[in-house]
Length: 362
Ligand code: EPU
Image (cartoon, rainbow, N blue to C red; front, side, top):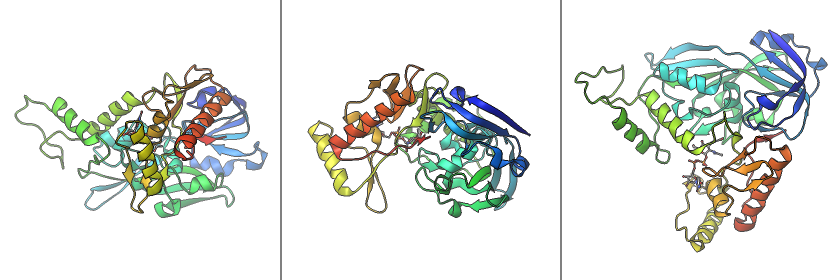
């Protein structure tokens, strides 16, 4: 079914809460709706939008917002004696609902991505990532509608060209409309706990949650003799995120506003020098295989003294300064843009590093 609304208020349809309008808003509930659409009659351009959780609308949108309401989740194939499970999820499924579904089936692979706002379709476009896992690591293929040919096409992971918060879908905007995504999950115990203090946090929760009085614990298939489960990792990730990130139900934001910059070793050493002068002898960093170093933008922003900084209704989130929030609930796109520029300028002046936004600006 296709539903078309003109002059649509987008205030509740973008997590930043920008009070803007779209000339047209189209919701479709099945893949078969797409070839039926009279594309040329719709206001242009066409913009697919999931939960609007990684976007900054800088003004009213003159074209058509296309929203998927395809919400099926199915196991489509099992391989390697049933351990490898291929799950197809509709592009309109809320990504965290898929994580909850996987946890309920004891399937590993996306538990570290729990509580990331957004939809399954957006997870492929944006190659969302958290706690050492990126969607692209577990995406087998993406099924899309190609408007120019009027055909459905399946892109395998290589064709999707996944990179850090990047994919082919970001570079060929409007060409593909994501209909569903096939994830390769596994029933074999495969926690991925190497990021930061995740292992420590999970182990602490194992102790807290372990049933100490049950002399005959029931073991799940493939389980080891401790209650380490997909759900346990998922719940731990959710708790960590809740502690650091603003509650999307209360404060508008689009998650991380900037990407973490990749620095040459020389530039990284320069950061270390400036940090040492300020009394910080350790710079958090992640060594890349090519010799470059990824440094958290949050650290650079913090070093510029910008935690909690406000501009109009916009603010830098105190507990995670990589996040710009709609602090007053009434921030204008301009407030956000000015605060963004202030951050970019401060970090560039102090470290000679140009931060680039992660959030799409429309
Ligand atoms: N840090 C500071 N000061 C702070 C906060 C953090 O110096 O106030 C430093 C700490 O050293 C910390 C490091 O930054 O160890 C990393 O922080 P965190 O684990 O919160 O991750 P991040 O690099 O800031 C990235 C993603 C997040 C994702 C987390 C966890 C990007 C742009 N962001 O943030 O993704 O949840 O890792 O994996 O890569 C998002 O994309 O919207 C998002 C929230």
